[in-house]
Image (cartoon, rainbow, N blue to C red; front, top):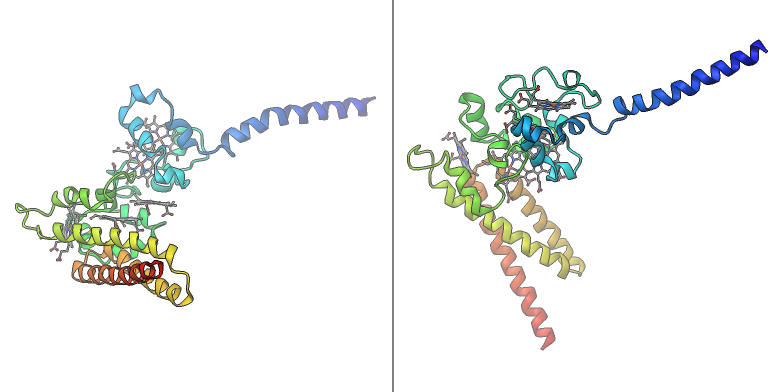
Length: 256
Ligand code: HEC
Ligand code: HEC
Ligand code: HEC
Ligand code: HEC
Ligand code: HEC
């Protein structure tokens, strides 16, 4: 009887722990992401508008969709439910050891965007950023939550904040930047077209080599060495146009 009582007691204890522990564990250890859980709270709309806006910008962004969360860029422990435990010590962007201190941003983004980072650290932008803090970092152009600068049409605005007649810092590069980006954009269109039309093996080989050329030029963008990128993007586009015209004319002749 005593043994049975013991077993019953054990059973009760185990059941109780299972009932209480599992929710406790899932709230604290298996939680999806405590940064998001807390920061998405609508109360911040009134209590802290800035905080609310950052969450809102992240929500639905390319990083959200790709599973990149607050802690990937800010650090901290996204399994802890309490703010004090979750937040890293160097949370504020004004703290020089913060992952988002302006000079540390390239390294933080570079964890995942390795190729861009490798090219960027060769640029005068990076050197100027490191030295006197005068160069742009990734967030200057992309926004901290990656919401701006992609298209030739809006690049000029971002660049012009530093490259203009007053600063005399290479104001002429804006026009070049627009042209390079436009060429890259049109090239992407041709490459898409070619991937649908090139079926023979020799054409597929050609396509492969041009894709590689495109990739190299696109990668070189973040070196901000336009002497190379300007010339190479011009050649790429002219080659693609020639190939397009040849193929298009041949197809047209066949149909006639
Ligand atoms: C339980 C709620 C809670 C959790 C969990 C939480 N935060 Fe916060 N966070 C806040 C509040 C409230 C603020 C406003 C400032 C303050 O009260 O410390 C804040 C501020 C911030 C700021 C702005 C800091 C500044 O100096 O302006 C960042 C960035 C931030 N949190 C990121 C994170 C990250 C990353 C995580 C997860 C690792 C996280 N938070 C987890 C509630 C939370
Ligand atoms: C892709 C990287 C990235 C992600 C993801 C990210 N942030 Fe940030 N965040 C930054 C950078 C860089 C800064 C600093 C530049 C600035 O102030 O905009 C910043 C600044 C902030 C600030 C302003 C702090 C201050 O005191 O000025 C807040 C608040 C913030 N982030 C909250 C969040 C929250 C909440 C999340 C998740 C929902 C998040 N961030 C996700 C990169 C990121
Ligand atoms: C934890 C990894 C991670 C971090 C940190 C990160 N990113 Fe991303 N980023 C991604 C992923 C994954 C994507 C989704 C598309 C892809 O695979 O390129 C993406 C997409 C992007 C894109 C769009 C690319 C495209 O081809 O449309 C840009 C621009 C970008 N990130 C810039 C940044 C910047 C700027 C920072 C720092 C403030 C940053 N990222 C930090 C992983 C990360
Ligand atoms: C001076 C402005 C500027 C700076 C600084 C900058 N970028 Fe960009 N970035 C651009 C522009 C413009 C494009 C679009 C290029 C194109 O159309 O091919 C781009 C494209 C990208 C892309 C998508 C294409 C690709 O090459 O993968 C990613 C990812 C990216 N940048 C990440 C970063 C990161 C990470 C940093 C910092 C290490 C950074 N950028 C610094 C302007 C900038
Ligand atoms: C935060 C300020 C800032 C922003 C924004 C900025 N730049 Fe710069 N840029 C600089 C500085 C500083 C230098 C270094 C100048 C030097 O050393 O001669 C530089 C140098 C360059 C150079 C090298 C010039 C040369 O011939 O040596 C290019 C190209 C360039 N930037 C392009 C751009 C483009 C394109 C944009 C916009 C997408 C842009 N920059 C946005 C500050 C900026």
